[in-house]
Each structure stands twice: as structure tokens, then as C-alpha cells.
Length: 159
Image (cartoon, rainbow, N blue to C red; front, side, top):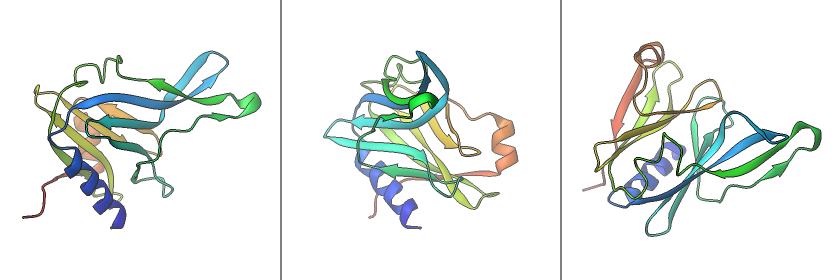
């Protein structure tokens, strides 16, 4: 539950702030990027960083405020930091204000597996850990919602 409360606290801090940039840790083999982002780092105004990743249990979404770190894996390639701000998934929300957020809980895993962001421009973005891989969606496919029995928990400040 501590992880969930940390995610909630970070999201509460970010609500009302503009998203300035998004970076990701990508696996490169040679000069070619492979697969999905390993980690995604969001930078909100007011120096509110947040790095989302697959947690060690293989199901939960993890959060850290530490910066992304590149890793040279020799013949297996490298994990490199790449700007995602111009990527199709993120470009519409850069410099937009986060208006609300949700925690995404899988009833199958009984864990918070992701977060959802809603921006003042009517754009939405979901970051999910599915099968120990990070997925980015503007809208979660219905088959994922149904197979994971996803529940969306509104993030609100304490009164």
C-alpha cells in the first residue's frame, strides 16, 4: 500500500501543473531501438519529476523521483535516455496542464498497474505495466480493460 500512496501523493502534486517534458529509457542494440520503453520520466513544472517503471513484483507500476540512468550492457546493447516529448503519444500533452489523474488497478493482479492522466486539452494518457512491460495508451483497449478487470481510482487531495 505504501507504493500506492506514493503514486497518489506524486499525482496530487502534479495536478494543476504543466507537463514540460517526457523522457524514456529505451533498449538500443547497435543504433536500433527495440521494444517498449523500460521506464518513462515525466517532468512537470515546479520541479516535480516522476519516473514510472515496472516494479519488482512484475505487475505493479513503480514510481521514483530519481532521474533516469543509462546502462551499457556490452554486447547486449545499452539502455539509453531518449526524449519522448515529440513522440505521437506525448506531443499533444507537452505544455498542457494536468487536470486530473487516476490510479489504474488490476482486479486480476490485485495491484495498481498504472496511472491515467487527463489534461486540460481534453487529451488522456495511460501508462500501464502489463506482463512486466510498459505500455502507453491514449485510450486503454477494451480487451485489456475486460481481461484485467481494470478499476479506475480517482486521485483527489485530502480535505
